[in-house]
Image (cartoon, rainbow, N blue to C red; front, side, top):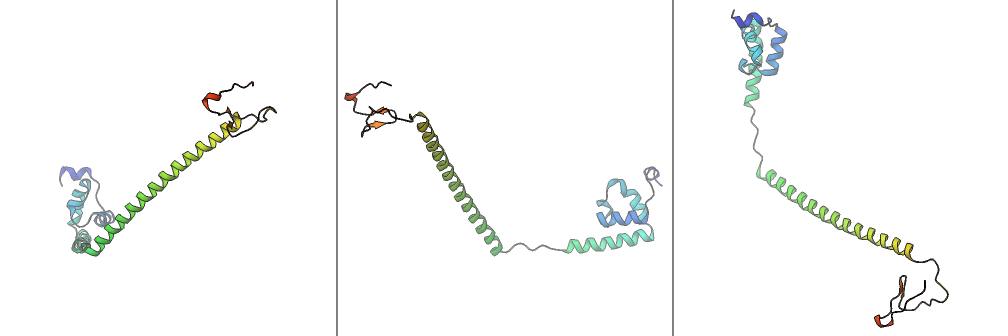
Length: 150
């Protein structure tokens, strides 16, 4: 035996079968730590049988060929992606519009609240409401500026 095999534990059939099932019949695919003991066990009759079965499975898996997608599938995927992009852009535009409308509504409500707080609750008897009257006083022409006693 080589110096490397003295430090490695001996491999049993169960461990060898588990490694062959996981990594296949080619010992070059096995983890480096298990290759030497695996090669030693593979020389036995049981090891050769296990590697033979794993090799058959490897050959079967290697023979499987995946067909390339057809032009119809490729075109369908591209059309679906195009449609989804358009829908996403429309949704984004709707949300932007709703956001702007929400901001406008918030401004209107804040303005309404401010005017209702600033507006006096009762008007003096001598104050006559006319077409130029506002909550902030008379909005007459510039020439008719009248100071009020508050």
